[in-house]
Amino acid sequence: EIGEICGRIDPEINIDPTKFTLDDLPDFLSDDATELDIKNPVFSLNTNNPIGAPILTNLVMKSFKNGQKDPIAEVTVNDIELAKNTGEDGDRRVVIAREEGDYQADEVAVVPNLNDLIKKIPDYIEVSMEPRVDSENFYELEVKDYQINDGLCDVDIPLTFGSNLLIVYNDSIKDLQKDLEDLDIISFKKAVVTLTAASTIPLKMTLNADDVDIKDKAGRPIENIKVSIGEGKETVNPSTDGTTEAESEVEIILESDNAFDTLSRIDRICFKLKADSKESSGVPLKDTQWIQVKKSALQVPGGVNIDLN
Image 1 (cartoon, rainbow, N blue to C red):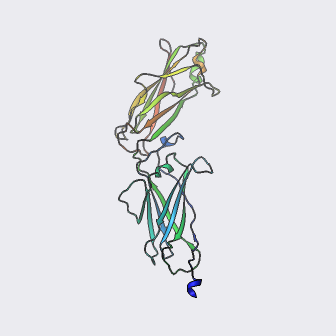
Image 2: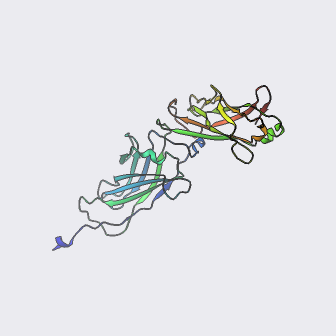
Image 3: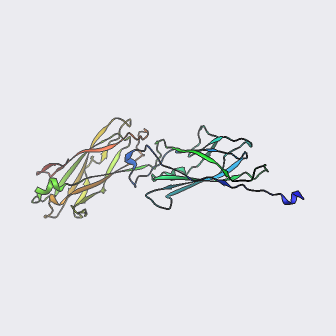
C-alpha cells in the first residue's frame, strides 16, 4: 500500500560558510592582551528561503585569530527558523544578540555568551548553517538540491562596555643610545623618565612597574635596574566626552645599586598602559579615539636632563 512505501525525504540544502571581519574598531584595541566585554553585540544574517516550507537551522559561529586553524571561540545557536510561512519565497532577517531588545528582525535569538566570539578581537568570524526542513508535518516538495542564498552577514558592536573590559596599549621609547651614547661615563643610582601622554579614550589608563621593561641595544632585558612608578604619576586621565583631549604625565623611576651601571646601556624602555571599565564615564568607544605619548624626557636628579624625543 502507498502508506507502507511513503516516507519522509530530507532534501539536501547547501549553504556555504560566510566569513566576515570586524571593521572600524579603534587602533588601540589591536593588542593581543586586550579583552572586550561588550554590553550587547548584535549579529544579523539575511537569508532567502526558496523551498516554500519551514526551515530550521543550527547556526555555528567561530572566531579565528593569527592564522590559527582552530577557532579561539565558538558559539552555537540551535533551531533558528529561516521561514515560518509555507509557500513563501522571501528574504528573512535573523538577529543574534546578547540581550533582549527591540530589533527589526523576523527571528531573534538571545545568546548570553555571544561576547565570547569577540572577547579576543578576531581576524575574522566564520558563520556556518546546518539547515533542515521542519519535520513536524508533511510538505509537498520537489526532490532536488536547494541552494539558500545567504545575504549580508553583519555585526554591530556598540562599544558600550561591561565590567570585564580590558584594554592594553603597548608603546616604547627606543633607540635611546643615540641620545645617551655620550653618557657612558655617567653612572646613576636613580633616573626619572617622564612621559607626557594625551588621550581621547574615555577610560583611565594605568601604568604598573611590572609592565615596564628596560632593554639594551641587543634587545636583552637589563635585569639589575629596578623599576617603580612615581607616586601620583601612574595614570593617563580619561577624556570626559571621548573627544576632548586629556593630557597627563607618567613617571617611570629607574634605580640601580650597581656602581658600574651607566645610562648609555639603556636603548629601549618598553611599557604597557592598561585600562578597564570599572571607572568609566559611560561614554562609548569610537574608532576616532586615540592615545599618544607626545614627548618623553629623562632626568638624573642633581645631574643630567635629556629630551628623548
